[in-house]
Amino acid sequence: MDVEYLKKNVSDALAEGLKEVLEKRPSDPIEFLGYWLIKYRQNQLDNQKELEEEEKLRQEILEIEREEERKRKVQEEILRLEKVREEARKKEEAELAATIQEARITNADLFDKKEEEKVEVTLSPIVVGDGDGDGDEEERDDDDQSRGSSRSVADSRDGEERPSTVDKESEIDPEATED
Image 1 (spheres, helix red, strand yellow):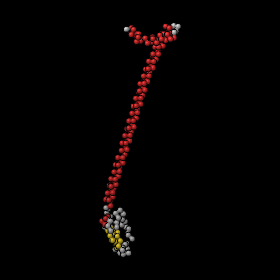
Image 2 (tube, helix red, strand yellow):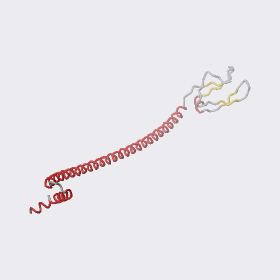
Image 3 (cartoon, one colour):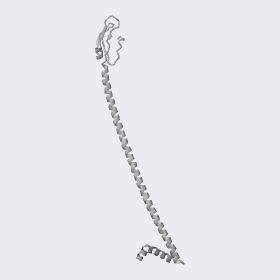
Image 4 (cartoon, helix red, strand yellow):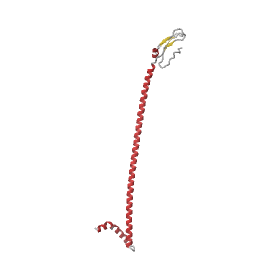
């Protein structure tokens, strides 16, 4: 059992130290072997420390890489969400524009219907004549004016008949006379 302990913990170091003593052949081989063993142990501790530091650095590098990967994924997700929001905003704008266009068309139709309803306005009778006061004037009633009917009016000045029409959209001045 003691031999196993020495083989496991001391034999490699002692074998290498004795090899150095044989190569160097120092004047005091025991002192040389003692210092060499102390230096050997220090080198082992330094090597172990370096390995631990290397492992720690590897772990930190892995953690940094994982963190960078998480950040990259978050950035990709942010970009994807921004794209989705932009597409939704464009779709909403298109739908709103379509709704506005439909409302304009509907309003235009309603406006046209109201305009058609406004055309049927009650008008006062108009006296149409030559204005010379000889009584050959003709009176038109409101229904004839609103329908835009035509009547022939005798013009005493030139003896010709001329059609007289009333336009639904034009203004009629009861004071004015036709020449």
